[in-house]
Length: 251
Image 1: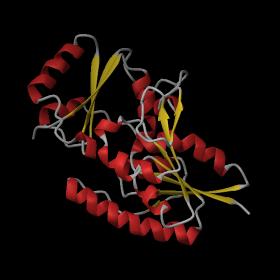
Image 2: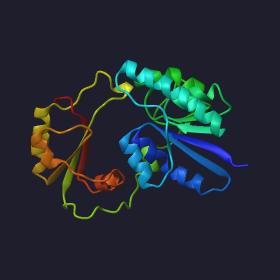
Image 3: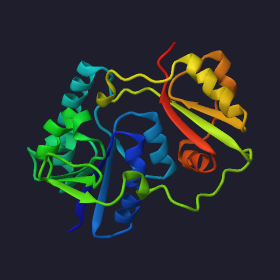
Image 4: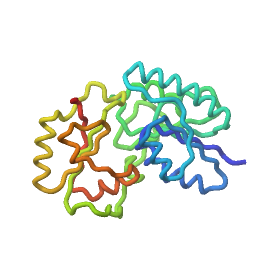
């Protein structure tokens, strides 16, 4: 009988972290692989580009109460999914599978690379319910369930030898603007527009500047936006002189 493994992806980074492992288990006749995610366009695009079948479970909302409602909704739907498909092992980076493991025979393995101090929800409502908490050895956990390894999540998918994208300039920089909607991002802010102007002016002295953003950019910045498919983003980053990631908090 095939062993049934579930990968739950709540962030594009989770796709990259687990994609090679998913490929391995999909190619092993002793295992049956299931993938769940929320209705997040980037994750869906990455999964579809890799020809990975998946199921949408729950939803994703912003704000403290929105996130709490999403967790409860997703907990219930995931419980039904796990029971229906008789999942034996759940691999994830979040909270939901930890909760579901309390009411099923499924074991929960969580991969977490954030410090305990910045993620109280994970520390209190996920780590204690998981069989193992796989953690980079640069972080020290409160939980005794931690298994430490010498590395980072990114080393599982970022490596030398990435092919350069065609038609990119010899020298270019990337400024990546994100939304900071995670529960551990509360109270944080980043570059304001004046600082972004100064940064782009400085980078343009050395070459082209590309901007990627999760939100609509103001008119003056649209000329810097680069349209590249999600699965090629790491190839774009590998050829850059510098990559700067920050948060856009103005309208």
